Length: 105
Image 1 (cartoon, rainbow, N blue to C red):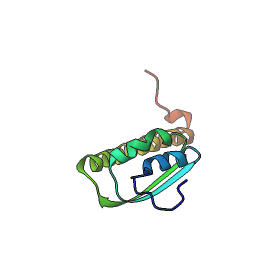
Image 2: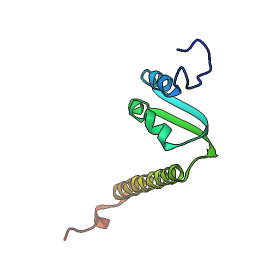
Image 3: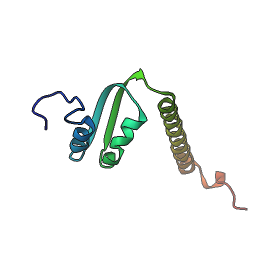
Image 4: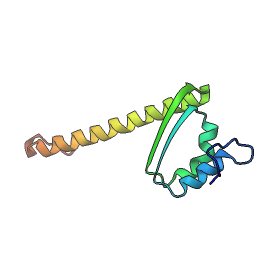
């Protein structure tokens, strides 16, 4: 750990400190002024054991990062919709009497 709280990326690299901390962490919370995928991919391999990841980011980024975040949200919504429809079908079949079950062809 540095002898001071400032990491200037000259003598010590922030990415190295983050990687070292992530190796022994179960959760990671980051607050950043700007966010780019290139920085995130630099630590991605160390996130496999992280159970909770929270990002608080400012509104400065690039088009590629914004599109990737939007795509991630769309995928999350699709997964949530799929889980909800499976749950609905399962709960409907439990409530339904045998006479209302679909017939096999």
